[in-house]
Image (cartoon, rainbow, N blue to C red; front, side, top):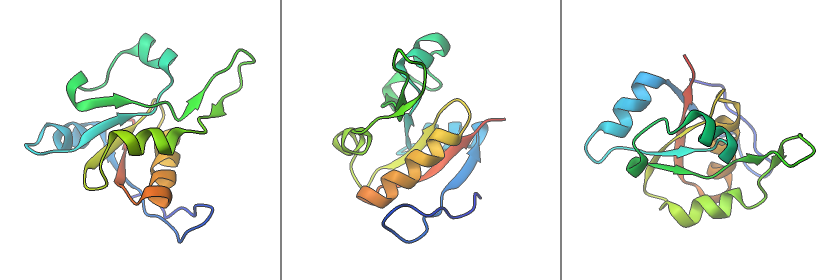
Length: 122
């Protein structure tokens, strides 16, 4: 389990990490978790989907504008909240685990979603 993280306006949020195998099992289980891929569209097009497309949604946590520096998606929380209900269980993943962890903390603080799990690369 990852250490608690402090978001801007809330108490510490606990973000649970799982490995790729556990994430796959959570998503594959009947009534299981849905997968939120927070990679950029460029990463998604190069590397492909990590899980079945019908169980996966891509909302980039960051963008890479022409200058090359990553910029946080200012509408990330609103976009995710429009696609998932607060009752859904969500596994969040990216390429390294850092953006997915940040995304979990932001979503917990903003909309109290059940996004306490992110995939830790193996």
